[in-house]
Image 1 (cartoon, helix red, strand yellow):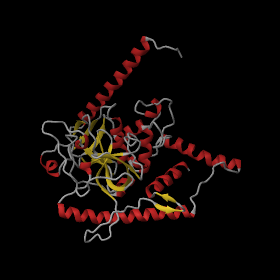
Image 2 (cartoon, helix red, strand yellow):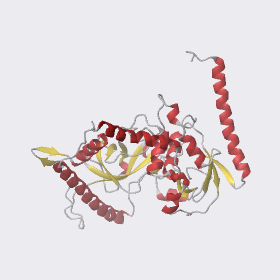
Image 3 (cartoon, one colour):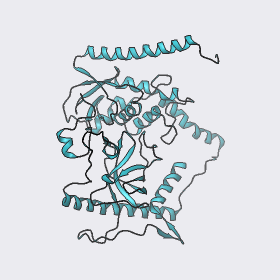
Image 4 (cartoon, one colour):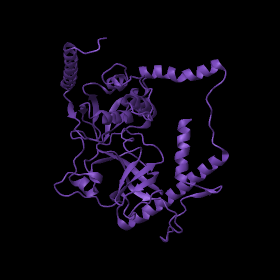
Length: 402
């Protein structure tokens, strides 16, 4: 190959890219023209949330989040959806003129312009990278999430990951709000069951070490097992966190009954664009999760979740979550570094954050509100202190390394 690229080669590449873009637009227009019931909806810049669920082989919109979550009253009265032209129950028929199955095949086929594995430097096998690899690969993440969580989770996360590089236009057919699907439909969907080409070759790669061990007759892999003492301490720590979480649930219920709502008021000056904690956001966790407060700066801080977050923005701040004072529950005034906390995780245009956050504490009597803060942040362990949350993180790292 020549060391330099000629002007003719550059012109040829530009022409090919322009032709491909024109073909994609033409395919989108033709798909809409063939079926007058399909309307084209372009995903706007900065959109964060659009959830889909599978109903057989059909992709049905299950949620279109509002553009502002600063207050429940505003959301009901005048908040606009993040993606206009799409409603709950609508069917997503095409994406850039291609069916969901066709788009999935392109994302996972080596050499295709939509396959990030082929364009990476250096290129790698499709599906070979894990969520811990840096930099991440959106195509490998798609393969892994589809296999573990399903197409209806993998596709929206892929769209969010590539939204700055690829303009996405949905072909949508009107449906009925609340038209959900059961687990049987989802499990039997072709979008979840079809075997991708990359999965066949990836399966061979994953099986190779086992065959190699058999040929050699011995393994050079050292299996690391936790000692009984370590397992016992880990179980005690998890049981303690579980008990503190149960007490936290009781406190939340009691305080919300008194206050009438949870969380502190978020506001944005009239006429100004929202910033910081007032940015539009999408909640990622269906249930409250736990973590450790790493820093608190008076008005904001950083939390390290006990379980890593599977999201394209998870590595933005070394795995830590941003938390602002307005996202503390109304009865919580601040957080103490090193303490355990409980919260929901959200994503916005900047990164990931924590909301509805409380600090886990021991209470001597939950019913009468007479509480004693848990000040023993370390437990005695053979003459040295042992931090419960640090132990959880340490055990998790050891398991990942093994």
